[in-house]
Amino acid sequence: MRIIAFANQKGGTGKTTCAIEVCEALFRRGYRVLLVSLCNPPSSLLCSEIFERLSFESDDAEKPTIYEALLGSCEIERALDTVSFGQMIRMSNRIERIDYLPTCTATAMLLKNALNQFESRTANVELPHFCILDCPSAGKNRALNALAAADEVIYPTTLVPSSIKAIEIMNDHWDDLRNRCSLPRTAVRGLLVNQVRANRVLNRTSMPLLDQLAKQLGTRCFQTQIRHCDALRQAHYEYTSVFTTAPDCRAAIDFDHFVAEYLYEREAGFELFERTHGFKNSI
Ligand SMILES: Nc1ncnc2c1ncn2[C@@H]1O[C@H](COP(=O)(O)OP(=O)(O)OP(=O)(O)O)[C@@H](O)[C@H]1O
Ligand SMILES: [Mg+2]
Image 1: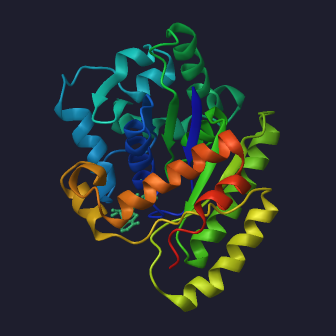
Image 2 (image 1 turned 90 degrees about the vertical axis):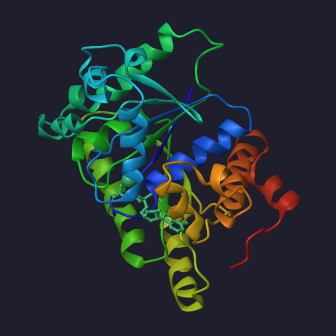
């Protein structure tokens, strides 16, 4: 099971959107997917409502959630819900309580331990190929748990300089906490530019900042960028993915292309992808 965290400590950069749409894109390519969100549901942002709806409407209220799974008082399997793209772990307002625990190796490893145990109990034919982690923008222990559990992190960002700066700050905090808690390094798979509009000034000034940050983090910007697309908001109003409501819209095309780039890079190397596919969305 490959564990990928979508992280950025700036709110509204598209972590939840990317997590949901990447799950759906992977599912449509035949992969088994598990989505874990560490956000607390009563967020003002629409995407969190998707989780709330998906998690709370289907089954009984007594069913264990991510909170119980992290504390080890139940197995992750008992907190699983079946959703359109595979499975996700039930959300809970209680998840925020994790942030009040003292930060130390033990509290940083709650999610990693729970997922490791899940892997060891689950047969290969049922184990998800990918586990996607949707990080919160606030919440030190929750973000730390996601980064500690992940094999790799993808930073979604808009082209607004504060979103780019927030990645640098988050990465610094993670390095610091990782050192203090003696946790292993997490590979930074790449920076994913989201909500791109045809704003040439912003694109021209922010792309060099992003390239510089990517170099600093030992990674790169994904060649695929996710364009601004109103169909995304519409899909999320309907509590579903854009692949269901508007499969031909820009966002569906871009997320599918992003997943193709990600998978291709893992299999054959980025240079080959670039040669074969060229630049798709020149904005
Ligand atoms: N490419 C896009 N085009 C149009 N709207 C988008 C796009 N990506 C995200 N959005 C919208 O931007 C808002 C913020 O996105 P999202 O909730 O995914 O951000 P987030 O990083 O998870 O926020 P938070 O840090 O609060 O959890 C949502 O309303 C979402 O629908
Ligand atoms: Mg979110």
